[in-house]
Picture 1 (cartoon, rainbow, N blue to C red):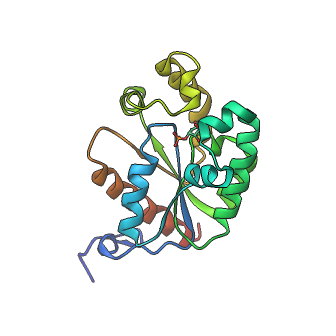
Picture 2 (cartoon, protein in one colour; picture 1 turned 90 degrees about the horizontal axis):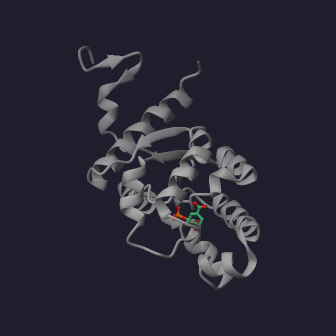
Picture 3 (spheres, rainbow, N blue to C red; picture 1 turned 90 degrees about the vertical axis):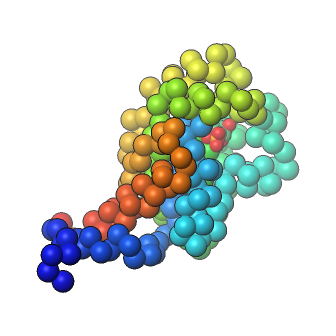
Length: 197
Ligand code: S3P
C-alpha cells in the first residue's frame, strides 16, 4: 500500500506482525548482561520455550557450576558446556541463554553460529556490576575484585561477542523495553537473511 512506509523493500507494517523464528535464538554476553531476564521475556513474546544452558549443565553434572569449577576446573566446565549446548542446539527452536564464557570457546561459538541466531546483549561496566554484585554464586567473580574481573573480561571478550548476528544494548531501562529492542533487531536481521545481497 502506498504511503505505508515501504523503505528499501521493508514495509513498516511488518513491525507489527508476529516474528517467527527459523532456529534457536542464543543470547550471549557477560555475566549481568541480562541474558536470563531478557531471555525469559523474549521466549514469552515469541511463544517459544526458554532454556538456560547453565541450568542444563548443573542438571547434567548433578552439582552447581561453582562446584564444577572447584572440583574439576574451568577446562572441564567448558567441555561440559560445549556438550550441553551442542545437544540443546539440536532441539527444536527455543530461546537459549548461555553462560558468559560459552561464546568465547571457539568450538561452542562455531556451533552456535551454525545452528542459532546469536544475540549479544552488550552492557557497560556499571550496569553489569550493579547486577552481579548482590549475588555470590559466580566462580569467576570470586577471583579478585569483581569489578576489575568484569573490566578485564570486557576487554578480552567484547571483540568476540561482537561477532554475534545481532547486537542490542542492555541498559538500566526496563527489561521489557530491551526485549522489544531485541525483537526489532531480530526482525531486521532475519529480513537481511531473506533478501539476497
Ligand atoms: C561464566 C558465566 C556464568 C557461568 C560460569 C562462567 C563466564 O554464567 O557460565 O560461571 O565465563 O562468564 P552467566 O553469564 O549466566 O553468569
